[in-house]
Length: 130
Image 1 (cartoon, rainbow, N blue to C red):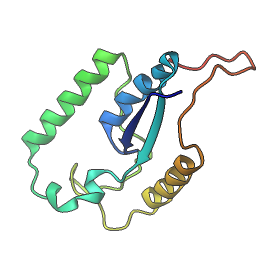
Image 2 (cartoon, helix red, strand yellow):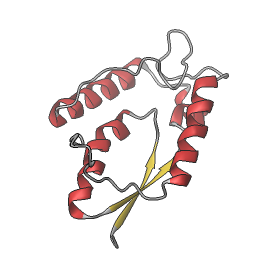
Image 3 (cartoon, helix red, strand yellow):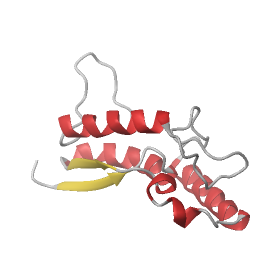
């Protein structure tokens, strides 16, 4: 496997969720996928999200819904969400993020152990989702 793609992937990102099936599809082309875990923008760049308005959030929701429909993916918010948001705000994260901290540490360690995502057909006969 000489070809590879490096992806900066956030568990919080709707766009990363939409990308996952396409990353898995690269196995047919024998392309390695190196996943670099990152914190979502709401946590990593909190100051950039503080003044976002309802129109921008509406456009974001419409865009991610359109992408999910185009790809045939279900569209729902994660429950529980990896990020706790301030009450009444889709853009402002709470200062304490215990679940996100835990998931991010787990995610980073998993990426360190499995440097390249190599997907193979399981030997137990169960199909790998495409």
